[in-house]
Every structure is written in C-alpha cells, then in structure tokens.
Image (cartoon, rainbow, N blue to C red; front, side):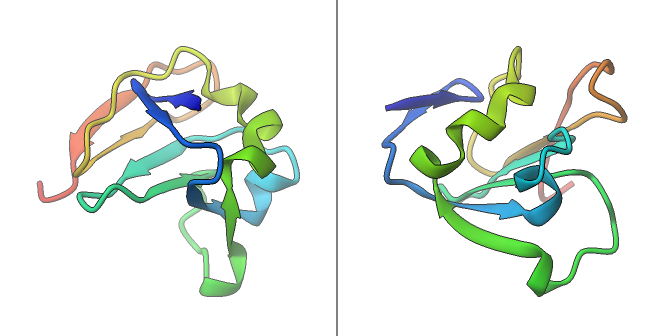
Length: 95
C-alpha cells in the first residue's frame, strides 16, 4: 500500500501522471476523482493527452516525494498549490 493524500492505495493502482512530474517537476496539482482515480500534475495549464501517462503507483512512488505533507483529498476533490513551498488548497471538483 502507498499512502497519498490521506488514503492508502494498492501499489498496482493505476494513476495518471503528467510527463513533467515523471521527469522530476514537483506535483502542484493532485486530483482524487469521484470514481477513485488519482492524478498528479505539475500545474501547467496547457497539457494535452500526450502529456499524461497511465502508470501504477509502484512505478511512480519515488517521484512522489513532492507529495509530502499533502492534505487529505477525498474522492471528488483536488488539491493545488502555486509552488512547492506554498500551502495546499483543497477544493471540490464541482465548485
């Protein structure tokens, strides 16, 4: 199990990761979809489908160090921050 955003997920849980996070850019946006899917992004707004990869959590757990001190993000919510030093802001996806 891998603990992320207040939840323990199986290591084989598929997640969506932008290529920037995979290459080492800090996670600035985390989404926990209402269906339970999880997504990790760098916060850049101009992503296309080719910028996102589906990977198992076990594949990316070493890339998630920038997720330390992440608040609990319930299904249907996302958390974002302006920089790695900024505080996380949790919002509902439907708001």
